Image 1: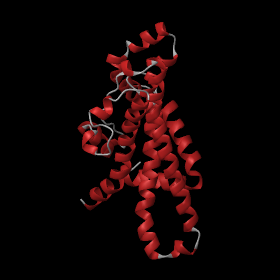
Image 2: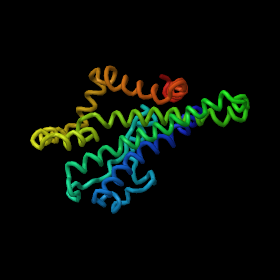
Image 3: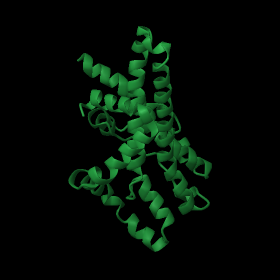
Length: 228
């Protein structure tokens, strides 16, 4: 029981920040382009209860990956709906990559402190060990969410971006996949080699690039949380 509580404590804040800020970013950029829908529905807030999807939240703590309820966007309020929707879609993954960058900087900073006289202090070790775990998990989940959401299939952000940059005829064909998009995504991830051959290597490469010498801390956090 104590181990479960420890894992939840480490995962909770990074996971909530990753999925909530992702959605808030969509709504914020949508409003900048003229659509106030998210604000009018109370979704431009850090209140987790406004965003969380029950199944998506549980999935985070089981699989290390989850989702929130999508922020509603009405492209009809945009001056240039197709172009503006591309920027709105990009806002979510971009936010995740920014959070991953901040997490990586924190890990690297703690790595430098480890080599100083502070690193030998028992108080320092007790304080920074959970912080490193949280930063490691934050780096991992934000890279994962950023990459995953860029898969070019609707209703993911990558699908929105693709339909925004394709010619209208081709974009209409891609849009027709949206009712089946979630099923297609599950099939690609769990029943093909897309994860092991494409997504996994991209995620691991980005984690190693950002974390540098502190990649081991990310690996330790993932092993502690998921036994991988």
